[in-house]
Length: 362
Image (cartoon, rainbow, N blue to C red; front, side, top):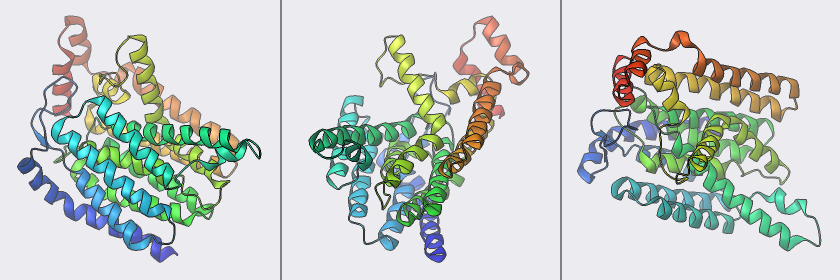
């Protein structure tokens, strides 16, 4: 078993690492370039955004080679292909948010039809209420898949942030799946982690390539679907709660973004600069520091997920407290706010220029 799990990870990692340079060469030829047109961008020059191809190839190939016997795996692979194609089209054509959301809904429904669903919801209603249970199960599953998919997409704002956070989440979920005997879910998560880590050397600051929506949507989709691959129905409860804990920071960031836009009477799908990573950049930490800071919080949340799965409630709450304390310190410690940030706020200078300068210095 150990050998197979290592092989799953290694194949995904090597294929992703080997195909990323190819993606860098292909990107400008097909027009998959990220041109900084607004103040939200953290880069100042055109960058290839086709790195999702490497993550997709590495993860998919590894799953097809090693994972057989479960009828849901081909369905997830098909869903992964569809969500990746949707992301690539968005990278090339800049799809309207509503069209992209509708596409995600359709793919999530396809996954439900392939029996990739949060089954304990329907079981909760018991006999005699199967229709109600099935309806609630359908709604919760669709919300889960679409929600996690977009959560990863929204945190893809700094070099290496989405890839690294997804890798941390995948490895933590893989470990939890392993200790609970969910070997299929463990192998799937290791394939996803290998694909993300193989791409990361080219994506970490200063990035040579971005993953694009093709990569971020694929990572989020695979995290959401693979996490509910538990072989027994009761394990699905753990499989759903663990990703929520591991992805606590991006999920909180996404929820806060939705609330912020509703309060400001802005479209929920509209992009802004209020995300956690934008706030860290505005405080002058720089891309490398901000990314590593968020890695550390994600890692602590991942350990909290492991302790939770083993019934260590006190330890879990303690790790939660540490993670939120770290975020509070990161956002409020005046000693880390660079002088030019303070001066620019007094003088009313454009914050985008400040962030751009800070990024170069970091």
